[in-house]
Length: 287
Image 1 (spheres, one colour):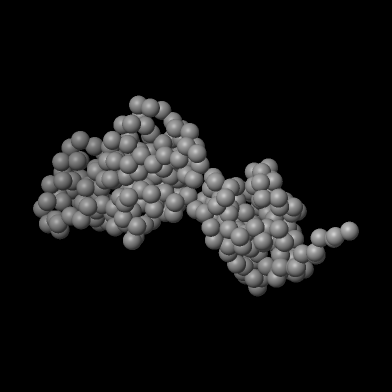
Image 2: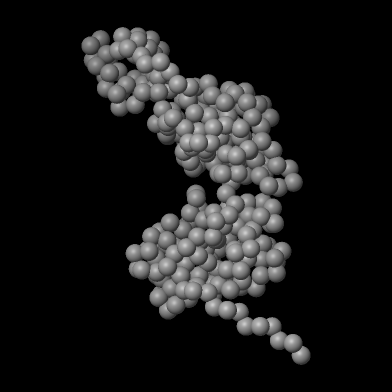
């Protein structure tokens, strides 16, 4: 009777492990090895991870680690690391910590002197960026925009001047609203909306930001996980103070001070603090 060889123990520490974002075949050989040999696998949702484990015939002990139980779980995990265990951390899809739980655990593990390593792999952010057809030499990942329009527009206005491609995650239900706000605050730019990446119905829709906003406003929420990629702002010639004042005065005749500032920041790419200070001076002079 042939017995299975005993698994070689992993070196103690925390293994931040990327998993596929859709296609189960996108897991790395190293990830399969570590997930098989880890003393414990921490999962954002054990049911989601169980499906991946079933496909790859992985038998491993799992435990949930998510936003709702993280504060309670971290001390227990740190004790296990102190005892010399090898613990893997996975999210439902992609790379942990990127808009997923895990940052506080990694920080506390490092602070306690435990080994922390990464097993890189799939990432919806990089996958969408490489498919968008937009500049990749500089990019800024902004995560999920705020759910409420006022906060979302404020966030977008602060990002408008960044000389890089912007990458966002977004839910299907808020996609049309977010795209419309991007048109208003970021101005005319090329963009792409990627969904269901690496899956059977993968789709990347590319075009001017305004056209994408109009499409999704008319078609309704699409299915699947969504990444929005927005090209960098166009390089503009330097504006003189008189030109900026004229733009502000025009905007202030039509909008509140806050909205006028956001409009001029979007049009000029200048720092919001600078435009806001000048807008206050113009408004005060008229009082």
